[in-house]
Image (tube, rainbow, N blue to C red; front, side):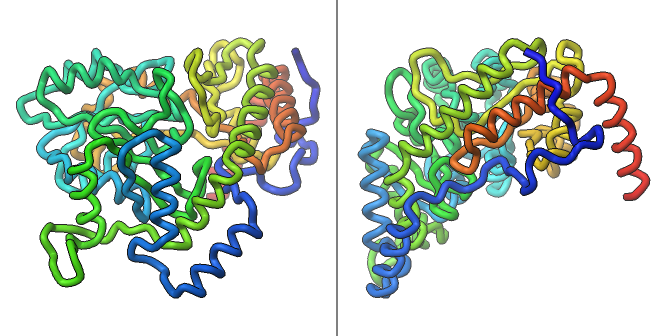
Length: 406
C-alpha cells in the first residue's frame, strides 16, 4: 500500500500540532490516585515501608506469581542492590543493546561489564556468544528482557549452572509479559522491574526486585534501608533504596487500569503491523508465538537498502511531523563513556548489536496515542518511503542547514 500523504519535510504543515512522544506516561484513574495521596497525607506516613508500599508489593507478588517482592525507589538502585546481594564481582556478561543503566549498575560497583552480542530476532542475549566470553573472572550473567521479549532462559541458566555463575535478569520492560506460559519475574536468582514514568505501569519513579529466594529477599530489604534490622540495629551494609508511599499509590492506581494500558498498546501494535508489514525493508518486532506481551514498545527495524530510506532519515521525517521517534538504543552502551574508553575494541564482537543500533527505532504508543494517530504515523512512513528519493534529498539539505546553524 502506498500513500501520498503530504509531508512536512517537503514543506507541508505537520500532521500533529503538539509533540507526540515515545513513552508518554500512562496515568490511570486520576481521582483514585488523589484519594490515595490524600489518605497518605492524613496518615503522615510518607515513606519507610508504609502500608501503600506493602500493598503494592503484595499486588505485584500475586500478579507475577513470585514468592517475594522488594520495592525500590527506582530500577537502577534495584539492579545495584541485587547485584551486590548475589555477590557479583570481577566480570559480568551483559548485552550492550540495552539502556545504559544495566551496565552502569555494574560499573558503579567496580564490576566490569563484558558486552555480549544479541540474537537478531529477539534482541536478547545470544547464549552461544555468552559461553564464548566466560573467563575465570566471570561471576555472573545479566540477561535483559528487552522490549518485553523474554531471554532464552533455559539456555542461559544452563550455562550459568555449568560454570557456577549467578544468573539475574533486567526485566525493566517486561511487566505482564510471559515466557513458557508464566509471567516474567520468577526466572534466575531474581529479576528487576522498572516503574519509571515511561514504563507501561509507572510509580512516577520506582522499581522492584522479584525473587523466589526468601533469604535473598530479606537481605535486600536490609540493604534498601541502610542495613537496619530494627529501630537501632544496623546489621548489614546498606543504602537508601526505599520506595515512597506516593509512588506506591501511583503504582496501585496503575494496576487498576493495567488492562486498558495493554489494550491501547495492542491496538496500536496491530495498526503498525498491518500498515507496515507489506513494505520491504520494514520489520515490526513481534511477541513470541503463544506468549503474552505488554506491547509497550513499538519497535521497527529499518533495512535502508530495501526500504529506500535509512532509520535516521525516517526519524527526521517523523520529527518534522511532531512525531518524536527514538533511536533506541543508539549508539550502543559499548560506544558510550566510560565503556568506549575502557573497551575500545568491544564492537569487534558485537556485529548484531552494531547493526541494530543503526536500524532500530521506536514510535509512539500507549494511551496517549489514539488509533487515528497510529494510522497517521503509518501514512507518514509509507508516504516518505513512496517518495524516498525526494525525501532523502530534503533530509540531506535540512541536515546540512542544521549543521551550519549549530
